[in-house]
Length: 392
Image (cartoon, rainbow, N blue to C red; front, top):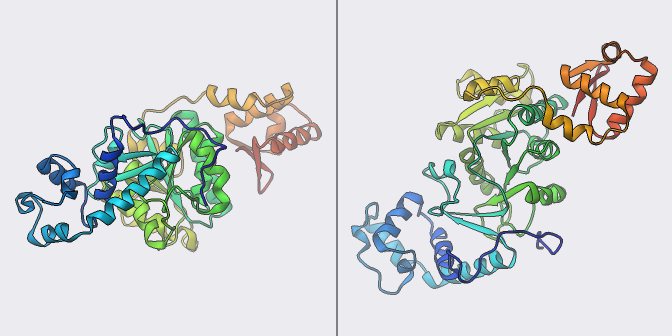
């Protein structure tokens, strides 16, 4: 099943006479398929040999002279089925050309700068969409696949506040159920670019339920993977995927996680990459927050309760708090001045109960209730327990 069909048009493609020729691309893909060859060793190989192609020629030079190449690795390189690797690489190259996917070899100037600093970064990435991985501010948001309502509120509010105070912030996550998809959808709603890191090839989307969101992300962000087409979303791939999520970001924010799970793996990977880790705390008896509480207690992560904590940890200057950008986007969908008045007051206070909002707007409750219902139907506000209203 091919995910990308005729319904979408993209700008990226590789022409036969492009800077990265088809032949070179084939050898780069083939090199990335050799197990045990990471970026550091690949750089040494390419620098010593002069090109990726030489490694796949019949008569190899003396590989033992290359730094990092021992006798066992040299023998392994000589014993690999180079023809089979090239055949698979050619097959993938045709898939890339056919579906206008952008391949990024580790030496490509467009390869994500932050990720390139990680010793275990993949040699090759495959991307679909148009986004700058080297955005000034990049935040990864991860967490449980079964979040509570409070966890979803934390996620949405963090993304909304980033959009208000730091427009253009790139949101990274893994397109999984729960916190991941909440972060992606909130970013799309509030005009932040967002990237989904996949644990499979670009010929499919997992979970299938997120296909529509994935299509929108391609238009307003990107999907990225290190896996070739025909790669299934097997469990080990998600662990490998997590290192890319951590490596792409300035900071990883964990929103609800048990003591075991992908979110905690991503947090520890981020710590190993010297990235900031932040976690929302939870009640001691709450299993879904036990992982976050452990990260905080063990000094792996800072505690976060609001965007201000993220700004403090990362040393970001406080952005715009007058909300002009988001006001324009929200107010464009409003029908009456009364709706505008209610929304303006909610923007100022973040959230309010019905009675206080009525006082602020100087509006009878009967009229206000109808307006709030209209705004909720428009997807602009949501109701929380206790009659509390807040911006989505």
